[in-house]
Image (tube, rainbow, N blue to C red):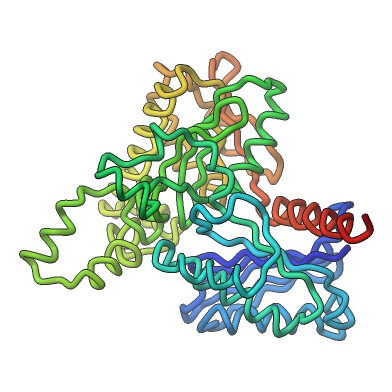
Length: 402
């Protein structure tokens, strides 16, 4: 069964074509820096590994480019659109409506659209991916896998905000949690490595979007992102945790509109707001050259992660391992080092030499004497989406024949 995975982020589209259930990746790629002059299109198969730098103005343009290369007579991997059996979509916000992988219908699309305001950088792009692939691959089943689903196990004491009860009961204002597909995948890989069923794990997802999850015995019990994917850790262009009185000050005393403040906090803050750069690789390079703003931004980023590690260790009354994942977590030895430095009170001791080793495999980078394991776990949201899509399609088929 050929399943195309579309993972549309705020400025990127990851994609893989996977033959299930053997999990053979037929092609994979990434459209990144969408909207910039130097957008990058990657397309990799067993025969070709292409990298094209050109302006890709929108997610729509990026999705059409993916489809064109999949069907290309020389470099493509399918002969016609009917070769795709199902398309699995990552959808960031599922609210309380979705706790499971779901077959996409008109009603489901309307519900996803109704949640756009809660994830304005993601849900609109997720929905656009669904609408476009419906047109391009009309015979394929369209499946939604929700980032919020893994966090349904967070207890009420952690997900409820200290505001009037009616907001929770009537308006469903609560902590939902995000990056759940990645956190679930990394949790399963980490627990398998630890070979310890009853464990206390902190998963640290660091990319353009960042989040951290406390996982006790395989279940999410707390998470840094909340009602929408804007708080918690410092992110590429999102501020993370901020005193809400600053919002009132910007509106009431500095003259900004609410829409302008929303754009500032989601698109012009975080590492971009602190440094003027959106790519961590550029920030690290500038910091090495002595750029004080970039160095301070890295220190702030690491400090925020440290605080959450401390809080979640307290919440779980212990810690067996921390797991770094996603683009920055997997590749930035500098930020991993800054986060793990001076954490020996928690039993976290980094092996500097191991930290510098680059690998695409799960690996431990702690010292032999470290009480807490420090893992680098390459995430694979696409494989996780493919697994859930395949399982749902099989269940649907079993219902038909039974």
